[in-house]
Image (spheres, rainbow, N blue to C red):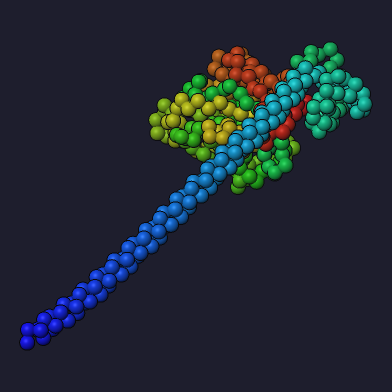
Length: 401
């Protein structure tokens, strides 16, 4: 019995040992599998890490290449911009030198008293140089010289200063040369808001169907007007202080001379006494305007001839016309037409000098050059507008028959 039990126990122990060995083997296999899986995951993680590092290196290298290309492009662009700026500066300098030389030639030229052919006209060194600098303008001056020579009559001992002249302006319609003249005359300097009189002679040279100005200025902010011209409706346009009157009937015809006289009693007068009056060839054109205000003062705008000077844009609203004998007083000299009658009856060559209240007077008596002298004694001379941008020619001197 005891042997049986011993054999039974031995067999159980052997079984248990086999089971334990199998369990140990399975455990060892599981641990080996887990270790293999861990190694595989580590390898995958390492591979991903290397891939990320390679991608980052590639990205940084591409970024450096792109930045280098951008720097090279910027450097090249700066070099190109510098070269273009230099070329433009050189071109502008050459153009300014050319225009300055043209001005000097025009100032030094003397009028011709005989009709010349082109070859003879070019024999004058100044004319030859003008043709070299600007052939089209030289041709224009050649034609103008011959036209003036045909119009001039023998002086019979009279001084050259007795010849009367006007300036012809081109206006600013499409294709025009936008010629005009500046002055240093500022209406505010002479307190024209407290009253003024202006007289001038004008010859319209274009259809009067667009807003245009013969002479004057305008400040925009706040409004301060001192300009005289034509409205787009064909009527007379008068701007004084804050008023812009456009309903005045226009009697003028193209090619004929007209005398304009306007007076203003002043902003310092009471309601109903701030009167504006106007005559064209001694014919009353404005008789009932009684409350024009010029409240915005000291705006600092100088007047132009042949157009209007605006504080935001300079020359605007050019008018194709001829002007001469422009006189401005800082008093209201007329309310009943007496002064207008005197001026008109004395004619286009009337001399306004000798009055203490004459603050601006341009006789246009030069006949040559680019300056219009102020004969009032205040020194507000006129100068031809600079040839630049849309302005491609100077105003043209004409004799008055």
